[in-house]
Structures are given as structure tokens and as C-alpha cells.
Image (cartoon, rainbow, N blue to C red; front, side, top):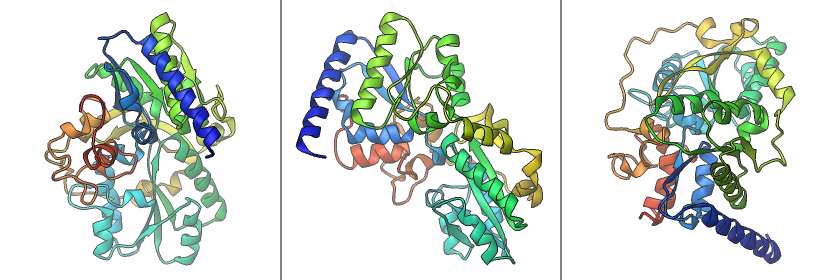
Length: 372
């Protein structure tokens, strides 16, 4: 980035901060939730918390797919991994997600066949290379990843391979926001909506926020100025009491999203209830394969009985962190028993996890916000 661009960004940021100060009444307490884990990291990296006036609090939400993957799902994945004729195909950030007694990383060290993939389509080549094995891909993620994995499901079906399966636990973002508001456990004055997810689904699925809950929201990109612009938009909505779904990321997010990806998702998946780690069952917040692709569902094609009960991790408060009820450093394990090198909770595992971000940019390097 050249000096002219840096100067321009600095001037833009200063103007946005002035606008935020104008829109905020001193002493007024406002809690805004950034839903996306990438936003959480960007907010720390850009020092946005330190720039905001006292009284505007940014809290992290359930926008990290690794963090919300249920413990029981990981226990099931580990049970499959324990079978000699199974190869687990997974993205690398799944390795350290804790199950009840172990993790994929530990299972791999003990001899389980765990294969790290960088693209979902790699499972096709794995299936061809290991015809004597059952390849089970751990299919998690929000709408952004769902589109890519859904296309892979179609490709596997078209390939004629009979040894590639998917263990599905996809999550949908809008129902989780509804669940947070319905729970009334924590006060939220506005949502900074995820950019990547919104590229796929657009603005429409969030319309319940202004129409039913009368709460402001805005889709944001990941540049500091884009996040500040979203905060300005939300504060302007609050001041005017005219609520809508704002969008400061219009360069890539259309109102109706990506219709091609949406149609593919409707073909491959159907909506179902699903469990979010630390939060519980959220109605219509997950996806499962449709009847046409059910033969690729690991739980259908390779039924498995997990005999040992899933036991919550003692002392871990990831669920409260994901709902914005506490800050990560308010968990008794944070920075002590739970650190990135040996994470106890899922929020410390992923680089997009709230606890990992708070540890990296705050606990390990100094000051998180004006409060500290």
C-alpha cells in the first residue's frame, strides 16, 4: 500500500470516527455484535475498539464455524476415525477442536487416518487413490463454505465413487441471530453482519431484524474503514429510528446474494434443526443432505452408535462467549488452562475464534480497549 493510499485511508477513518462521536451521546451504553469471526480479528488488528468512544462496546458473536461445531459431532467424527478402514478428510482448523475425551490431532498421533485437505474437491482424488478405504469428509461451515461443499457433493455423485461420504453439520447464520434475540439473555443494540456469508445469501434473509425486532444491522467488509462505516450506519439508524439492513460491502454483496449458489444449495440440502456448541438446539439452523444425495451421508450409509455420553468440558464458557454474554477473558480458563498451544475450548482453537483473537491481540500483547 503506497503512502497516498495510507493517507487517504487515515483521513477516511478520522472522518468516520468524528461521525461516530457525533452520533453517540456521552454516557450512552451501546452494545454492537460483530457476528463474523473474521470481523473480530479485523477489529483487533485495526485497533477499532480503542478508537470508539467510551460507551460503545463491540461483542463477538457465534460467527466462527469451528467454534460452534458441536462436541457430539466431534465425538462422532472421532468414532469414525477409530475405524481402520476410514480416512477422515478435514480442513486443518478442525484438528484441535475438542471432543469429550480427545481431538482429531490426538487421534492422528495415535495412528488414525486423518488427511488434511485444502479444497473439498480433493476428496474425489482421495477416493480414487484409496478404493479400499471409506473417505469421510467433515462437512461443517456457514453459507460460504456450504456452497463449495455442496458443489463437491454433486461432483462426488456424478463421479460414480462409492467410497466417499460426508458427515454434515452445516450452520445457517440468520436463525442463530434470531435465537440470540429470542433468548433475551444478553442485550444487543445492533449487528455488524458477516461479509463472506452475505455474498452468498444477500441482504434479504436478515430482513426480520428491522421488521420483527426493530434492530439496526449492516453488512460490512473487512477493511477498518468498512467496519467503521457499518458502525456509522447502525448509529444513524438508531438515531432516526428507521431500521433496515444496511450494506457497506456493496462491491461484492448484492441484495439478493448469489442465486446460482443458492439454487445449488437448495438442490443438495434441506433445512433441519441443529445443535450449536455451548448454545444448544437452534430450530432450522442447520442443513442435511436431501433424499437425492442421502446415499452420501455418512450417518445414513455408515450408521454409527456412539456409546459414551458427550460430557461438557468443565469450566469452559465458550457458549457464553459465543452469545456475547461474557468477554473471553472473563472465562476462568482463559490464559491459564486454555491457551492456543493447548486449547480447552473451541473458541481458542480457530484463528477466527473470539478467545484466540483476545489472547493474541490482548492478553499476549497488551490492551484490548479503553476499559483495560
